[in-house]
Length: 107
Image (cartoon, rainbow, N blue to C red; front, side):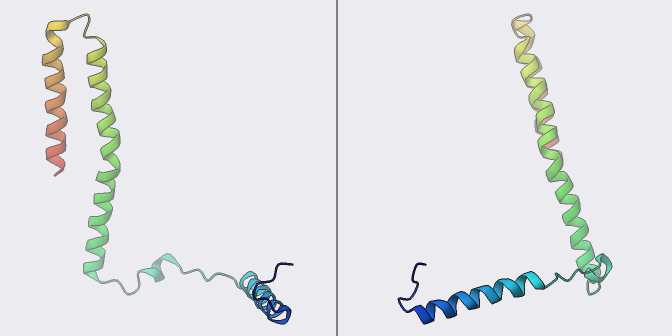
């Protein structure tokens, strides 16, 4: 056994304390709180803030899929650019302006 403090008696006391802490932690059950009890002390202001936060989280979560839709359209246009080179610039500008409009409408 590796000596922690250099004294065998102190090392044994430290190991005993560690062992008892582990046993206490294993013996305790975690207390669970029901969902309605969790909001027992919330007032109207708290509910408004939680609602706004939930709406904001939904918008934030939808941002990446919406971006991927527009990015996929741009890649598709660029991939077909060799067939219609004159129309490519106009189509890219149209999809890009739609992307900017959707970004600005969220802000």
